[in-house]
Image 1: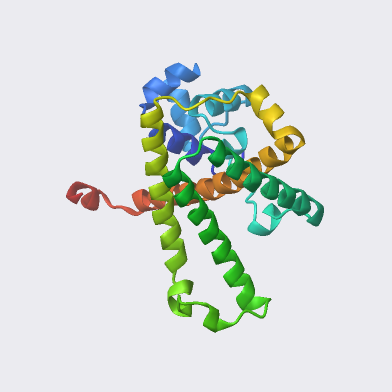
Image 2: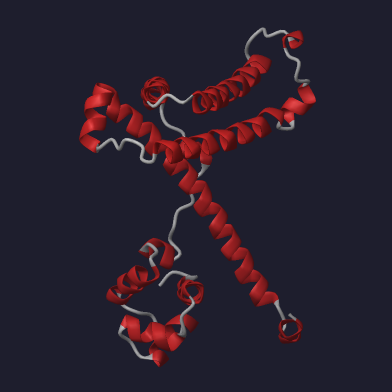
Length: 236
């Protein structure tokens, strides 16, 4: 069994908030045997590993400490895939505009357009500084505030106002029209799959970063617990 499996088995049980006795009952083994597994004294068979992964809602690779760490570079798509994503983004922006006008509300549209404009401004200004012949005097926002996140801060505020306006529109209209999967495909036509792929790509990227952060936090807390002395625990 891979190094780290025993510690993972105990860690996931603790995170689930169940006692060793309760976990053993759910996993169909004795408490003594589960204790041996968690201490690394004995090794379980594949059936137990699969059952434990299902119970703790993790993959068998995570439980076995076999998860391969994907780098940011490996997440990057080849040029052909990026070109497909580019078209998906173009189509997605077009659909956003059409949906905004379809359920037209002045305040919702105002903040949505400014949010997208701020995102474009941020990308173009960074590209312009590096690749294009943009003149510094074009900008009223000075370079230092821009690099320290002035536009990003504005985007957060615009998103908050957009969400508030969208919520208000929903309250006034009581119920927003629901678009089924079939209606969405008919409405989007050939662009449907490309837009869905953009959503999935971004979702995978965010989920990967979130998982990395949670795993780093879990490792940190486990190390902190292991390094805490009994006297320190009593103080805590």
